Length: 161
Image (cartoon, rainbow, N blue to C red):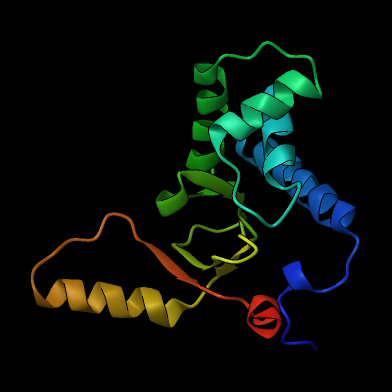
């Protein structure tokens, strides 16, 4: 199997989007959650690339492509729903959102963010979460949430430099 992350491998990205939407539909149905048309469309837009997308970027696409006159609070409510239900992650340093590659189970977000091409890759390394929890416990700190954001250059951008 290639060690090149999916975001940088040639692939049918529409399959990524379709898979994410199908998984969201299934997850919401199992949990009795309402994935409205707007929430689903926002999730679809977040998955349109492997690059984090800001709320105002989503709002612009809804206005330009869909002709929707959605207000910022509407988009933020949709994003809040998607966040609360593990379908997207927030990349705090970019104030942007990226689709969660493992929404079927709760986990902490760990991301490699390329400052060249702006692709963000989600990691899921239990050892990173465990190290944070152990270090926090040593000093009596109770962790409620953790997001690790590592900024650098991906292999493609390093090769191009």
